[in-house]
Amino acid sequence: MSAIGRFVCFVHIERSGGTTLHQILRHGIPGYFAVKPWFYWANEAGAALGERELRLLKLTVPPLRGLGGHTVRPSEDYGRVFGSDPVWLTVLRRPADRYLSHLNYQRLKMGIPWTFDQFASEPRFNNFQTIRLAGEADVGKAIARLDQFDFVGLSEEYAKSVLILSRLLPVRPFNFRINEMPKSNDMITPASLTKEQQERVRHNNELDLRLYEHASKVLFPRFRETYEGDLDADEKAFRETESRPPYSIVDKLYVRLCKRFGEWAAHRLSGGTPSLPAQFSEIRREVMRGRE
Image (tube, rainbow, N blue to C red; front, side):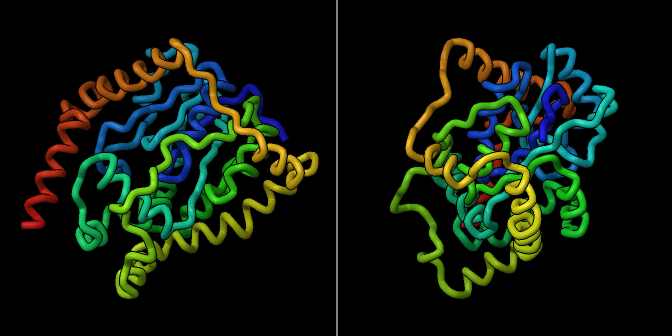
């Protein structure tokens, strides 16, 4: 199983381990570019990286050999830009864990003071993985698209996932998770929720639960079977040695380039949409008004 030489598209779903995978792909594939989102509500239709945007990106960052991010969508025909079908990748996470991680990241990292009830009342956070893949709350369409992917990893099986991926693409796995949430007494955890709140989490992610079940029980076992070698033994050896991605001046320049492109995209591609920090500030004000 190999996809060496084909253009790579990574659909990065928030709080599923995608930041780590960006680093793995970037160090293994020269020309891989992580596209920063330019909308707070990243699942909205207008937030997608379309064919027009990709053509502009191709001119901006040559030679472009792959891209990933919250704006990458399997519904877009990126193959028309490069003349062949891309390699499609994504990583899913257990829905309840991803949902609460998303809430905690918003609260503790982004400084948006959501209460649980406020967050759970906002439908744009519901079934996030399904909508990212299908473009709508249609789990059948999301599963059909996922079935066409060249690789589907699981956050809960991170080590096995990156090892399998290393047989598909010329990448070296890193046994080091990036952008993990540090433990905090302010975190909202399943144990801190009432039974009614836990049921609300389940209800808000009903479609994602069906999507994850398909990925974990049907697709991931298939990818495991393609692995040449003893995956369990390789995983054990992988876990015993921590390896971090190299970080140099080139990496700093790359991160800056990603940020600048995100800012440029917001202005050039989105009709003068306010910057992401400005959008965060507005969301904070709205959330605070809702708590008054």
